[in-house]
Length: 94
Image (cartoon, rainbow, N blue to C red; front, side, top):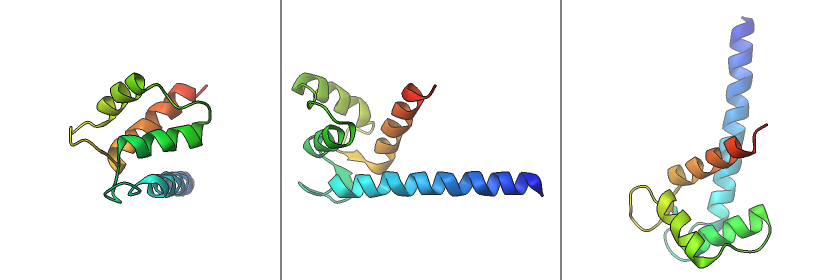
């Protein structure tokens, strides 16, 4: 049963992390349009406020947004946002 405890504890942590990601996403999504997606401006605001520092240059943000907008619909949905967060976490991991 020790394995079940580990899996259960790990899943709880994962669910908590996803809930935090969702909360941050929902805070910024829908200010300009659909509440289920982030526009380029909403994503820029999110990154600026959550990561601190100066906002990215427009050309950098355009390139970054295009990379995140995997389906090319002009907005970033929650799944695309999670990919961003996972990528950042991997870059920052020791």
